[in-house]
Length: 106
Image (cartoon, rainbow, N blue to C red):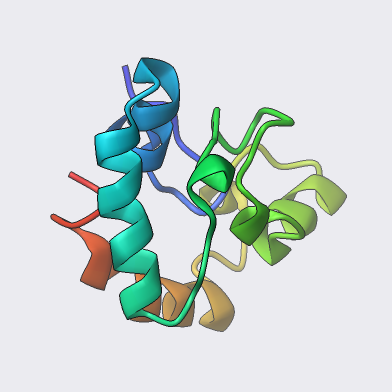
């Protein structure tokens, strides 16, 4: 069953989430290499995430504007918002999510 983050990523398809559940450093290294390619340096031990709805997220997701916005509006997902998809979420999806499909999102 999908477990969607605030912005709509299916956490169960995210390699960071799966590496956390399986304690898989090989997958963490793969994700780390991807992030370094896009200019984000994350230590291996920080590639730990149990999903957007948990309090265990990687530092790169700390302060996520979509999570904050959704929580302020009392939403579980951005898709529940009357402004969905907002310009910011569209930019994020085009810039980070779509290019990562097949790399860190299966």
